[in-house]
Image 1: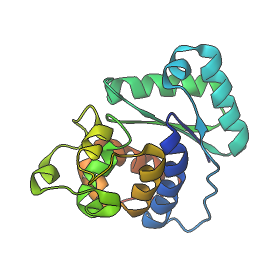
Image 2: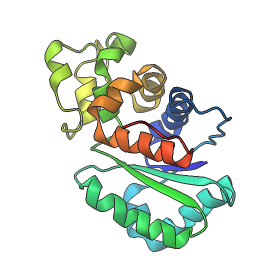
Image 3: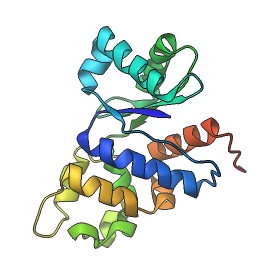
Image 4: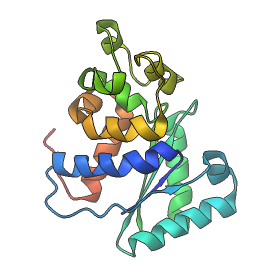
Length: 197
């Protein structure tokens, strides 16, 4: 497996999260998740040479039978429209690899908002009852949402993101975040896991 991400925090947090998903989804085999490849989202999506170079690097890191996961923030784009477009382009570059594209609606931190109940009190994050009814994928500035609820300090992408990934309740994120559902669905498909409907 090889991953492409856009943020410094995701470089640290995504491997933690994927290892936890592996255990949670009853995956029996060892999962090797090397350090993700970090890209500039705009350059990756808008410059063909950058797009192809990073995908080929990801493909070489995971081997011929490996899986390439592209995980980016959707920001203001519609994940259901942009995701398939990126996937089609990626499959042209890596026709012999399994490729998945997951766009987090809107930012990676939306998954922490989705699992906020389980993170309450962690690293100074304190959420109220009203915070737990918010659609976690609506706030445009999920980092700011987290910062405004952290006691005495602001949210730090490279320090708090890995800690939250290690602690968040995965079922809470699954129940509340469609983009996290997409990640888990891709994980299950790539690992041959069949879930009852």
